[in-house]
Every structure is written in structure tokens, then in C-alpha cells.
Image (cartoon, rainbow, N blue to C red; front, side, top):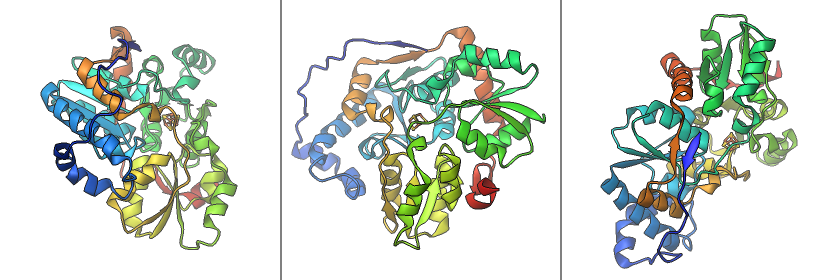
Length: 359
Ligand code: SF4
């Protein structure tokens, strides 16, 4: 991926003034988020939210935000929100000239692959991902040499370089469906080892796994889950399949980011812990004030590189543009488009955890 940059030197005060006009303009947003953003912080966030929302209209820009973004971004300036797959689909459908991707670089690359003619910006070019950086295109070519004829399924949390060497991409929401769609007995599945084990427990297809891990989800332990349950018999534990297998075995539900969000509403649970990135609970809590969220806080340092001042700077300067070389982009796009054609199965990745993972 190429990212063009200019020096980060916005010519404005470090903190924008919180005027009565801005207070009034942002009041509807504040009324939605006041349960998850401290009142002391709002005068700092609101002027940026107001400036970004004005500039978006001038630029015909759309802001896409991943569920792991902070509430002031997710609820304050995002036009479209979702998990990796949802963001990829939204990137295809948008009419905007400029896409500002508030997430990590593989997400911005995916948006660019699907919209080669549009300007795709990432507010901080250093927003990476431990999973994506665990493997390169050269590694995939070596795997193909070692396992000739075995197709490669890659999680979307990979670089365009890896996607270009991939037969079809998947997300945690459709991985089982994608693996089974190939109609073969053996598949190379990468880079997330834990997601691979979760998928392997749900299919007869043999998976050859890579040892990539998400640095956020791998930090949770089974002892953490048992600790959360102590004194809370009604606690419903929702876990993301990037967590280690012993953590998933302790969960009541295992599913993708979107699956976890849907399960909060569908389950009728009154006390929930989401075993995933920290900001998810804040963002879901806005829509579910009736639910008591236990909030362990494992932050993704890469997601948290995106801030309101950087988003504003991006819109003002149209930096940092994400570019993918044409030949690589054409091959990478094919693997993403194959995934989008398969679609998201109603039940894929949305499995009750105990029976499947423990078996
Ligand atoms: S939460 Fe994990 S998988 Fe997601 S961007 Fe951060 S490091 Fe990557």
C-alpha cells in the first residue's frame, strides 16, 4: 500500500473554541452520547464534530467508522458504521467522491480496492493491525508451494499484498460459509489462528492455519471470564472468535462484531460483557440503555490512532491518500469481490459457543 503524506501542521489552535452556536448545533448528538462520554470532554469534542460535519458536506465526503472507534467519532461524525464486511459493502455503494476511513489501514485499502476511482483517506497512516502485519504476500506464495493446489482463504484483516495472493477473502461473520463455498476438502486459512480453530470446529473442511493473532483479543483469558461471572449469575458473555479457544469455551455466545451487536438486542439480556475491543461496549450501549455493560477495557492502539483532529486535518488537506498499485489491486479486488458475491450467511459466525468450541 502506498500512502501519500504531507506534514501534519494544522494552522489552528490546539483546542477549538466551544461557542454557544456550536453547543446548539451539536446538542442532538450530545443528547445521544452523554451516557458514554464524560461531560467534561464534550466542549473539546463538539467543535471538531461541528467542523468535520460542515466540511464533509463541502467535500462530498463520507466518513466510514469501524465499531472499535471512540464514541465521539462513531456517533459524532460517522455517516456509516459497521464491522469490516459492512464497511467493505458500504464503500462499494457510496456516491461520495471522498471516503474517510476511520479504522485501520487494511480497511482503507479494502475501500480503495473497491473504489479505485475515488479518493480514499485514512486520518493516520500508521493505524496498523497485528493480524495484518503477521503475514506477507511472499509468505502466502511459500504456503502455496508447500501445499500445491490447496486454495487460500484470507481474513479481510490482511494487506492488499496478501489479498492479491488469495483466492477468496472472508470475515469473522462469513468465514464458515466462505470456506465451505469452495467445495474442497482442504483449505489454507489465514492469518488468524484462533478464528481458524473456531471455523474448523464448525466444518468438515480441513484448515491449514497460520499463527497470526489479534493483540487485543489474545489478551483475554478464561480466568477473566470466570472473574466477570463471579457474583453475577445473570451475566451474558459474548466473545469475538479472535479470542483464544479457552476463552470462547467460557462464552455464552461467539460471533462476529455484527453478530455480537445483534445478539445484545435479540437475547433480551440485562447484563452483558463483550469480550472484544473496548469501544464496542460504549457504542452499543448508546442503543441499549436498558443493558448493564460490564466493561473490561482492552484497547486497540491502532484503532485509537484515529482522532477527531486527525479526521478534520484529513478533510482539510485530503491526506493521507491510500493507493494500491494497479496490478496488485486487480488481483486483491478479485478476492474481496468473490467474498462479497458469496455474501453474509444468516447463521455463519453466529453460533452458540459452548457446544461447538468445547467439542
Ligand atoms: S482489534 Fe485486533 S484485529 Fe482489529 S485492528 Fe486492532 S489489532 Fe487488528
